[in-house]
Length: 357
Ligand code: DAH
Image (cartoon, rainbow, N blue to C red; front, side):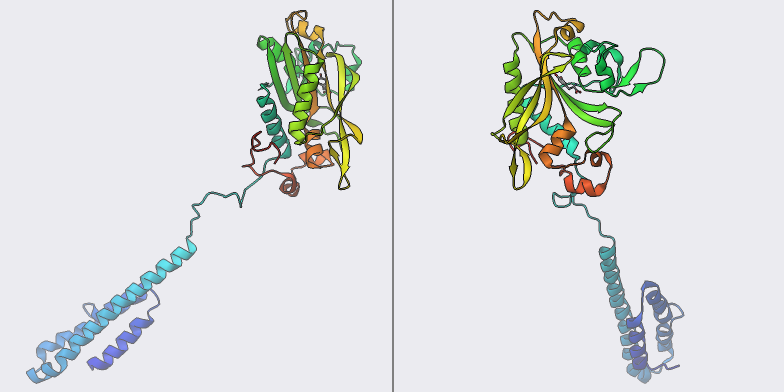
C-alpha cells in the first residue's frame, strides 16, 4: 500500500467521483478521513517525521486531506441535487383543477333537458314541484278522474306495488303532482313537475322507466288561449327557433275538459327531420283545461278556479332536439353513448346564454 500523498490524492479523488450514492460516499469518507482512515493515519505520522521530511511531506499530506474532504463535499452536493431532480420528476403532484379542456364525466341528456325546461319555465314564473314515485292509487288515478273501472287504468300498463293497506303503484305519469300541489298550496298556482314515471312497456321508443314533465296553472279566468301561448313560448325557447307552429287537436284525457293533443310542425333540413316549419306534424304534448272534477277533488271550488295542464315526455323532447333515435340507449349506461350525447358539466342552460348546449 502506497503512502505517497500525491498518489493517494489521485486515487481517493477518483474513487470519490465514482461513488454511486450517499451510503457509498459515506463509506469512502470513513475509510479516508475516519478515525482509522487512511488519510487520518498519514496525518498521524507527521509527528514522527524529521523536520526535513515534514517540510517536504507536510504540505502534500495537508493538501491530500483538503482534496479528499473537498471532493467528498462536492460529490455529496452532486448526489443531493441528482436525488432532488429524480424526486421532482417522479413525485409530481397536479394541483390544478380539471379544466374545461379535460372534463371528467358528462351530464346525461335527460338532466340537461330537465335543466333547460326548468330554466324556461322559471322565466315564465313557474316553480318546480315534486311528488313521490311510489304513489297511491287515489293520487295517480282516482283524483285525476280515472275511477276504478275506467279503461285508462289498463291503458297505463301500471306496475302495482305489493303490500297491505292502500293500493300503491309506481306512478304512471307526473299528473299526480298536480293533485298534491293543489292540496298543499292555495291558488294561484304555476308549477312544472319533472320526474321519473313507470309503465310496463319496452321497445325502441318505450322503456319501463322514463321521464315526464307536467305543467299546471290554476287561477281565475284562465282559458285555452293562455295554454296555447304558454306552450308556444315554451317550444320556441326549447327548440330555439321562431318558426315553431302548433296545432291543437281535440282529444281525450280523463283529467282535462276540453282536451287537446298538441302537434308541432316539422320540416326537412339537410336530409334530417327537424322541429320547425310545417311540412308535416308530430305530436309532442297532451294538454287541456283542468277538469272541474279534478279541481273539486282537491278541495277547490271549480266555479271560482280554472286552469290548464299539460304533460309530455322529457326523453322524447331530448330525442327530438338532440337527434337520438333509440330510447333504450338512454338507460344502458354505455360510456361511449354518454361521451357522444352527454353535455359538459359547465354548460348550465341559461335563457340569456341560450338554453341549448
Ligand atoms: N298524464 C298524461 C300521460 O301520461 C299526459 C298529460 C296529458 C298530462 C294531458 C296532462 C294533460 O296534464 O293535461 O299520458
